Length: 442
Image (cartoon, rainbow, N blue to C red; front, top):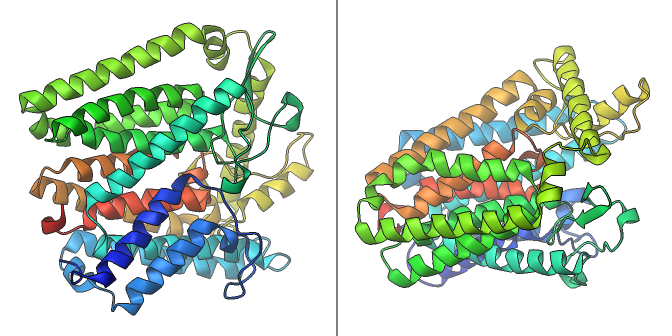
């Protein structure tokens, strides 16, 4: 066991699971807590919970660290991730906007540091992988229900206490899809953009796939129903990046599932889940065909063309930034500011923003050195997780690795797995849970 059974283990695991349960909450505290620096990231509820969790792990004597470090790939993952954190903090000293607004880089570096330490704590002394899966299934259920409600109302549901963004009309700057005179308000969930809601749903769907592969009949049946409902909620977000990420995460994890699919009852449960998901997609395609065609580029709707053109502009800016500062980058969290300076010399009606590719974003902000550490942490963590899965064909571990893969795929077309604290936590946290839990907790 990572730590002795008793109240310490219960308390630590409870806080860890609470962090995963808050993955879909954008909720920020009404005011800065006096114990934290007044940086943007420190008002997020999930930040506070991660700090408490990490503090408990340190207070309890970093349980599990010694055993964790005995496995070379796990140790390499931890070292690469901690080196990335160090480099992120170091980059604030040469940040593009560091002299005028040092808090920009400091907030981004602190976010990376806290999420990385939380991931290390989960890897060393985390709850059972199936407990993390259960938390993510709860997240899927809650966000699917909110999605259905927002789609039906075509507005927010008044969940302001949970941090829901208030949007109710087309002129409020909210995201929507248009096909001629038909307009559809995309659901936000409890997050600031529909694409982020879609990311949460993808993670929940891949987590529920672990139930589909369960030895327990009730879990297989529940998992199949959750997949069907979750897929329908996902397609209602109209997030193309998330749709593709679900496919990539599932397909790349498939070879690890083959051993479990040899069991006839599990194979039947998986087939039922796939058929129900396909039926949900068919119903969606029939019901929303005009909007789906517009999203695919038919009709040349201006909002779709604008979405593509904006991404091209920021990609070009990121490449220009890399060419100017290839080794060190512009400093963690500083690319939107660098992009805003590029925009001054253009006629584009845009504000500085992140490039919609996490690898290019990392390259532009923390340079070639930082990107190498970033990729090393991803590779070492992935190998460590695969080794843990091969030692024991555990559906929960496989699903958590698939979550990590899916967010890595999302990162090819969107930036939130790298820039937002909720998804940075999910990305590294799911990988940590996949590679870190000892065999007797699987």
